[in-house]
Length: 466
Ligand SMILES: Cc1ncc(COP(=O)(O)O)c(C=O)c1O
Image (tube, rainbow, N blue to C red; front, side, top):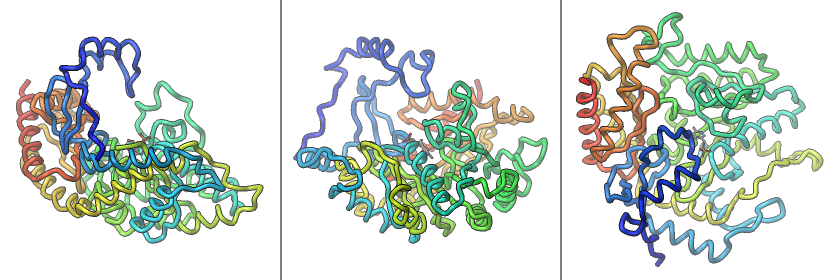
């Protein structure tokens, strides 16, 4: 039995010295020194909680970064990793070689995913999965004799990762500002964001009668404007995560599938957040009985115990790879594709999700969580909308006295104060602009989530008065 690593506790480390070294030598994601004056030094994870160097315990209300599905401290996964490292830590998984865990995990994922999918290519994370999806879509069309189909339609408020192409597909301008120019050929359509209506010209307020059909029609028009003969694929998150848990109308994804078919473009589902039970289904398009051509996944595949991502491909796309002449072969490679240790941990993690019924649990407990959030927070004057699906939820704060975009933007500072107050009370949701996002571990109990709602309600009420 492998021991859990000994925590670096406050007793053993000089926290102030550590933080001096951190500020001196470490650049963090989304970095600005002003936001890093007193960072939390996290030393341990236990179930739904993380513990800092001062011994404070917090409920991990975003499951790390939407990814610790099975909770922290699963020594079973540490043991699997240690055993695999001791047996075979690495060998290249390039053509001509294979290993046991990557093959077994691919077979398992295909069993769990949409019925039309049949093959997996592994990456190290979500951005690289999306890069692989883009390149595979172009590869597919080139092989079919349509080399001009190279563009991608994504949606505003979408997030697809840190690399240049994934960032170019991302529809959050803050991620572009200091890194432009973006990769050519990425075009954004409207998001199905009912609460911020872009459909009604001149209005920043909620649409009066939004339907998935309207949003899909806008996307179709964008596609037509670009000329479908130049478009390789549409990419979208089934529920937009980092944009603020934007849940589409029920008829939206079936319409997108029809549009993709009508215009002969592939449909890529970025399930990096929504995969592996997060929304109460193994993969989220299943809510609407839609099958994409390519799925990008990462995060929950290992519950973040090790980095792993990948794409799953329909038989049709797989056939293109298999039937390519050898001089046109799939020249896409990454050192860690099919990494045996990451895949072994992925396999063991998926087994935990299955064994403990965490997908069904996410559906059931998530429904009650959303209901409670809506009942407790919905009536508060500073709460504009409460939304969610499965174990993903968001509370969008507003300023009812403001007009236009200030209706939302004036609530950004309030949202910041609310998450700070939640942290003081042992809860760690994440703020995205004026929206407070939550994606609790799938093992969370109803009592823990009721406490989260209580702390959030108190924080919104107390901070709204300031
Ligand atoms: C929907 C989605 N796609 C892609 C990514 C990028 O994944 P990674 O950060 O693992 O590269 C993320 C990360 O949050 C994401 O939310």
